[in-house]
Image (cartoon, rainbow over all chains, first blue to last red; front, top):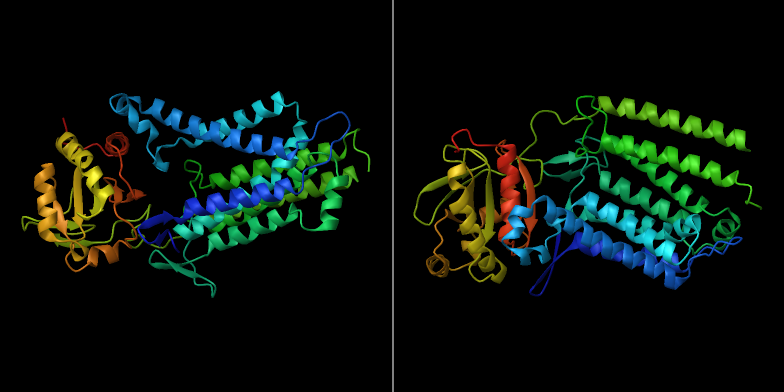
Length: 257
Length: 190
């Protein structure tokens, strides 16, 4: 666990650093494995990719902060400069998710990019970001596991616990390798697959991994009194959507192998 | 191919649903109360320190601990972000003290000069309780890595948020404090 990196007078939050590195890694992988155009649909170029990523992030940041400020308007009305505070705690997660979807969709429509091809192009970025989230949790000691006496348990917050962050890191890395451009055969396979299959395969792998490891996470919220873990339910829905999407893409009449 | 894919998909989803049900039983398997730790979801590590004026104050356990929600802010007089957020902390102390919210600050006296801390307090007109961490025991117990660091603790005695670094604006503090007061209203508050 290393939540803060002290370099001279600077104290850097390593979680933020992990997110930035993951974004860079994801963009690098995405740029080197852009999907080929299919039929009349326009595939994203490197220029489109960066426009999608930066616009999505910018709109996400603005909407996450904007929604937070609106929710707590009373506090911000008398101190308008606080709206610009460099405080990651002042972000609304739903505003961020909505913002990124809106930003990406706006760029996609403006540049007339194919829906599935855009998802395929952004898949390595998503895979990189999920790897970043797992790394950030490991460094900050958040999203920790339940107590256990297994030989590979780690001592964290006063007890021996399941190293859930390590499980998450390894499985996210595996999901990233599925879409990593370094391997020639894999890249050729993706090139011949119907648009959208790359995204669906990654989403299925990621969702299945989360569904599995969340059983050992101590911080998961549960659904009211049922005891059902909310992240697992969301992962199951994502897995079902990914499998349905993959089925839909593979049986698409435009798909020719 | 399509039929085989559908069968495999249904099998995977069924296994997933079974796993969700099976891991529900394992939910909350932490035996007994969680040990104190400087992390969200845990109770703050117990501390018994004296204030600048010599009064005892306990955190986490003990006779002199706050009864409602509170925050613990670690600071030093030589730290510019700590100095910058002091007026906002004072405002929170003045505004929410009567509603049952307590502001506690811990001066890192082991890395600071007590006289310099007192001068800063007088200059800024700070009246909230300041504990002195003379031996560095609080810094060690709270795994302190950066200054300032602020822990927000609910009325249930569980840490709800940890903010590393600063300065926090008054609005940022106000929102966090009001959220805690909404969750844990003080019975005696107006």
